[in-house]
Length: 237
Ligand code: ADP
Ligand code: MG
Image (cartoon, rainbow, N blue to C red; front, side, top):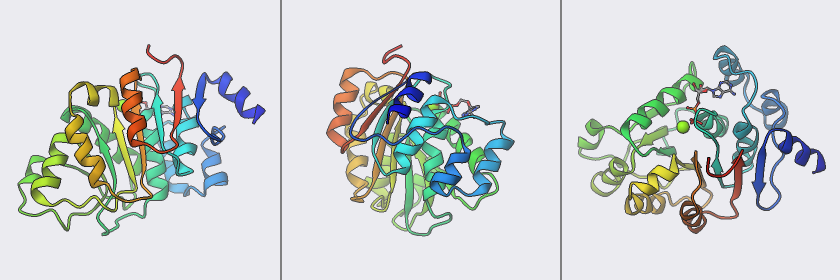
């Protein structure tokens, strides 16, 4: 515990919450501590990703332990890998059992950027990673739709749920990315509809952003259970 505290201090990681899992010292620990497949580690190495960033060191073990979290770390600090890595480690690839994970992004641009990142990390694997597009929503019925990771804006996802019977009851991970913007854009009703549709009782929800305004933290607390708060550097810079 004391070692963890020192290590966090060294990496400017601030945590709050009940029994927070130890931060990662390196990516190798993903295989020794969590049984990560060699393929994912090789992909990271091929991408020139050698050392985990502070947010990755702390958020990955939290999510792998099945704990919910809200995390705040600067732009460009590798938040995408922090929430995608646990998905790629825990989800069964090419599952036909509905949707495995949902990543919500405030805009379509951010959604396409996120999907490009996800695909890079999953390169050469069987993971099915999809963007909720206009074409998909035009389909008559999405009740049988399945993929491992689904990236969407709140509006499109809400339409798919309400009008096309998209089933999110099997979702194991729900991420609200750039959550400060998600909430600022007044997407609360849409997000609420999505959170309700993700009805799996063992779902792990998380929230990532570059700033963590008090109102976002308050909203986050209303949807999350025993969440860990992770802040890299200072809270709102
Ligand atoms: P954020 O969402 O925090 O703004 P991104 O997830 O978009 O940041 O990551 C920014 C860039 O850093 C991406 O190109 C990503 O591939 C790269 N990256 C992620 N993790 C690492 C790492 N541990 N080492 C080096 N580069 C990384
Ligand atoms: Mg990001």
